[in-house]
Length: 207
Image (cartoon, rainbow, N blue to C red; front, side, top):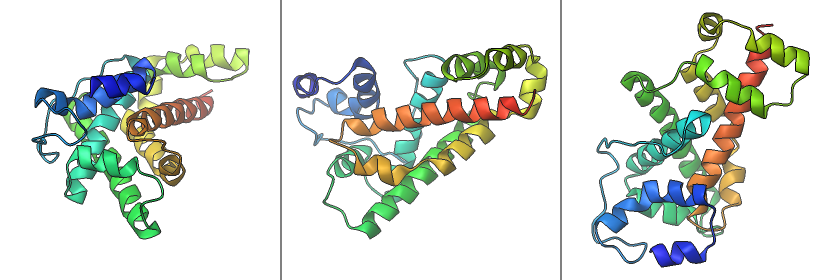
């Protein structure tokens, strides 16, 4: 499996994300994308991100969300990723079912992280969001001066994430998958950018 992934020439982030979801195959000695034994996606497992900030938050969100989607569809996470990585093989109805399952899975992941207390307060994400946003310099300075208590009272991380997930164009994302290894990388990138945009837009309203 490691040889094939290396041959794809994926960036380090994509490898880390795919490793998080498909790592069970290595644990069971799987030499292909069909492991001898697959973990039950309906069983809660510990998922730790390998990054910090918004990137780490969305990495964990995607990993849990894919598990939730696979559970909802009654398949293993590996089988789901394989199927989603095969463009042109599914009907519109099948794609709609998968899109609904992915969106519901990501939303369920937000709720689980909120219940676990692992969602960071919005104030911890502000600086990173502003670093990535293209804002007027004076507006950026004014936003950075807002006290954390005000930011956290006005912005709830779970609300930002749920709104982001609701607005994601998952159909376009799935249509552009080149292979199964792209799923987590593209989901993580899309969610990260959407979170940054959402935070920046809503922070403007506080000034």
